[in-house]
Amino acid sequence: MLVFRRVILPVAWLLVFAVIAVGLIKLAFFPDTAGAPALGGGEVPTGEIAEPQVSAWRDTVRNDLEVAATVQNDPAVNLTVHKPGVVVDVFRGVGDVVAKGDIVASVREDVALEDGSTYALWSEVVATQGGTLSALSLVSGATVAPGDSVGAIAPASFRVQGSIAPADRYRLLAEPTEASIQITNGPAPFTCTGLVLETPLPGGDGEEGASGEVTTTVRCPVPEGVRVFPGLAATMTIAGGLAEDVVVLPITAVLGSAGTGTVYVPGADGLPEEREVTLGIADAEKIEIVAGIEEGETVYEYVPTSVILAVDEPGA
Image (cartoon, rainbow, N blue to C red):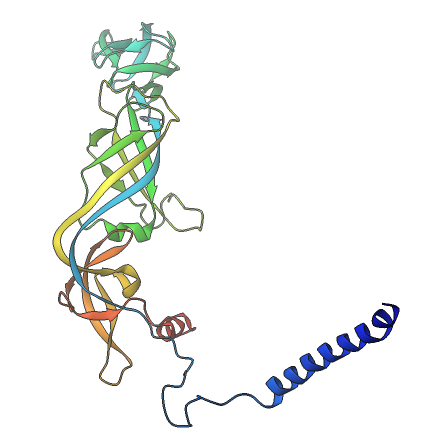
């Protein structure tokens, strides 16, 4: 037993390692070519990856633009004087609720006659809108003139307001007039009409987005009877259009997203061939092809990388 452990076992291990070494040398320097195709025969890997293609199909495209918005008070309305004179009586104070047409104060103007006498001409400062008096500077004995702003009325109405980035304006093929509103943790969704889009004019006080671009403000009034509070978050959904049973392609296949675009079809030489198309509305996955590609035609599912790199080059 002692001879086996000291002599035979180490020799056996040496033989095993020798066999492994010979095998590795054979694999490295003398590969087995049996069964391998001769040069020029059979299919040889080229390293090329075929770019996926897709056929145009018919589908329905619904383009809804979702805008992050907030509930805001409607702006206060100035309380102004229309006739000159001296304030005699003030009938209302800050915090009072007024209706349209309520008299807030009386004003007396002493008009001089040719004989030196005068007569009193009375007028009133009237609320032009219902709401709460949020400011009032009228006091008895004060002299006022036409056009003077002497207070403000905060209306009891609200609006939902958000901002649309310039690129998203392309998604609105027509000027919208209403939107669906969902108040976060609030009442059931409701429709607000009278939707208004405002884009600041050059030189005006524009509203700038995070990247410095001028954005479009979109707002609509909250209908009466809907209970809301200033500052509530909301989602405003504007219907940008609906196209049913139209030819579509994945948006990944089209270079461009509004008006006109370019797709790439397999050419006779096997290379991508450029094709101009007219575009309609789009959703998050597909875009309507108005003209340029027929149903069933094949295009590259993704704009070729070489084209993207060329477009991204400076001066391209």
